[in-house]
Picture (cartoon, rainbow, N blue to C red):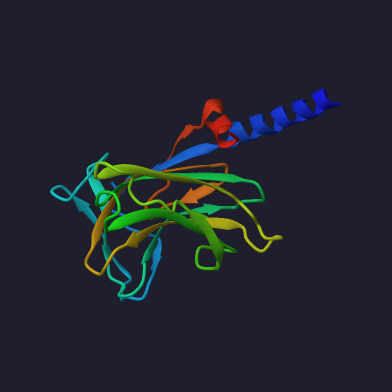
Length: 206
């Protein structure tokens, strides 16, 4: 019986591996954000920029200027749907901000939605860490979410970048990668560039 259970598990993991796709977005098409939240008007000044602004992996990047007094503003950079219980969504992005324990700083976060991008359905958490010691300015920030439908009251996930600091503080974002079995919507056109390898999928389960 144990061997049968193991076979079933392997088949399920292989099915997930076959359908997982890594989506990539780099702001080269001039897009900015899908939406934003915060106390300012607008909460974040989001601009698609080129050199001499910091640019990492492509000709352009996303510039985010904090504009929410007394608040931490949030921009929405990817909408992942439809999702069901247990689905894994891995987000990875490069952020240009200040060194360890200083601001401005960018965090990768997410919230649940139900029935569309504009219907929030609860916080999904994310990477709470600030910059590692001795970090370089461009750094990778990543997180993996395990989807929870809360009994069917959620069907999607919106990936966020949060801007910690004070009004006027600025960070830059580039090279967004989302690995998921679902569809992924970015500020510009979605780009599924490669099927995820079995080795990468196994890493989700460690």
